[in-house]
Image (cartoon, rainbow, N blue to C red; front, side):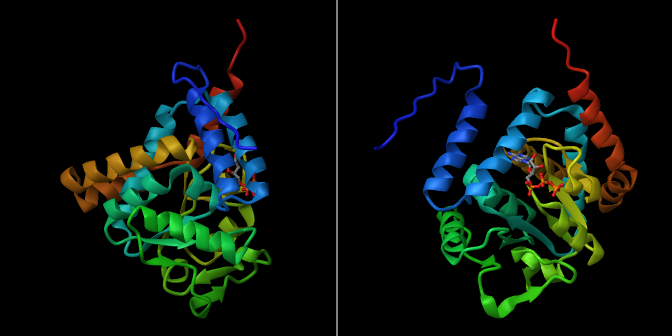
Length: 254
Ligand code: ATP
C-alpha cells in the first residue's frame, strides 16, 4: 500500500523528518542499504543532542575543509547510499564548485544494483563521469577486509585528499595509512572516523554541504593560496571534537 506523508513545514522537527523521509525513499528506490537506516538513526540522535544546527566549531571545520579541497591537487568525494539519498543534488554542486574534483561511489554493503541506482541518481544532477563503477579500474586498499577494500585507481587511489561523509572507521584508517588527507562529515564526535580524520565536520551532511560550497566560492574569489595554507595549519581537529562533545553534554533540562 502506498504511504502518503505530509509534514507541515511549521513542524518543530520538520528538517529532521524530511531527512528521515529521504532515507526511507532512498531505501525504497534502491539507493540505501537496510543497514543505512540504522546509521541514519545514530546520526539523528547526535543531531538532536547538538541542537540540529551548525555550531561555530563546525563552521570553522567547514571553512578549513573548503581551504583543503581548494589547495589539493586531486580531491575525490566518496559517495555512499545515505549521502546519495540525502544530498545528491548538493554533492554534485559541490563537485562542480571545486572544478578539479572527482566523485567516486564506494559502498560498504555492495550490490551492483545499488551502485547503478546511485550512479543514475548522480547523473540526474548532471554528473556523468563517476568513478568506482568500472571493475577494471578497481584495486584493493591494503589492510582492509570489508567490501569497500576496492577503490578506483583513477580516483581515491591516486587522490591526495578524500572527502568521506558518513564513513566507517576501518576505511578511514586505511585511507590515512595510504597517506591521504581525510575530511569527514560525521555527527558522532566519538566515531573512529571522527577521531582519525584530519578535518572532521561535526554536522549533518544536509546542512554542511551547502555551507561548504559557500565557503569554497568565497575562497575562490577572496583568498590566496598562502592564506588557505595558514587556515589548514592552524586547524585543531581534537578541539573541534571536544567543542562538539561539550555542547552535547552541557544540555540541561530547565
Ligand atoms: P566508526 O566506524 O567511524 O567508529 P560507525 O560504526 O558509527 O563509526 P558507520 O555506522 O559506518 O560508522 O557510519 C555512520 C556515521 O555517520 C555515524 O557516526 C553517524 O553518527 C553518522 N551519520 C549518520 N547520518 C548522518 C548525517 N545525516 N550527517 C552526518 N553524519 C551522519
